[in-house]
Image (tube, rainbow, N blue to C red; front, side, top):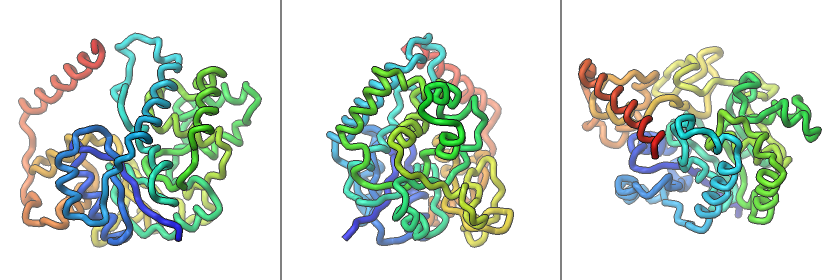
Length: 339
């Protein structure tokens, strides 16, 4: 029997978002489907406490797999041309661990769906499983429409290599905040061959420099070079499948705490709270009026199991508080530059 399950990537920093995601999966997807949390790092005290009360939720503990992907990603990024730039030019996610999500390919589930912790599940996933019968990777995003200079892959450079044409590359560009795939892809031998291409054959330059240390950009190279079939719901011939998913960009309609695409009231797979910080969600859950779109939906799922803890009133942060946070941001950037 083929095992199916869901992965996410989390630590205590995104605790509020993790709880909301787990509750949304339980209500809108399945209360029985197993969920495995991949540790972003070792800050897991609150996460471990939470999953004690969730019998279908576990913590990924294959350290060999984590090390395999960590080592691979570090070697690749160290070989990227941007690694030679000044420390001041390093992105805020430099030395991050988002690439740990790829351990899902080594996990227990034969077929899986990955939700980033800043998502909420909005509908059942039978259609995703069905697509996985014919494809090895399934996505639901609009990354393929990004301008060439912001795309995950350096399309002109890849075209110049003679390996792929733009019309072959562009439809395969995708995000990594929500995807479905299969266990066993990218085994050690294949990953070693891709590492050779990336480092020794300088195909690391195929990865757009603006995405240096970005798991999404690395993932795009892996899926392109593996030449396995990819499906993206946003490119479906059925207009009912083509919806938005970003809380900060797309308009949705809330019906009983389930969001629908505003145009056509089409069901969406997930709402992605990208570009909102985990600190903003933590403050929202503590009663601060954080500026987050569809925050009422988030709060519904965050406090679904303990509604008595849900804030009833929200306060505006003072000017002094805002100034202090801005100063903290500046100091953090300086610290990253000199470290």
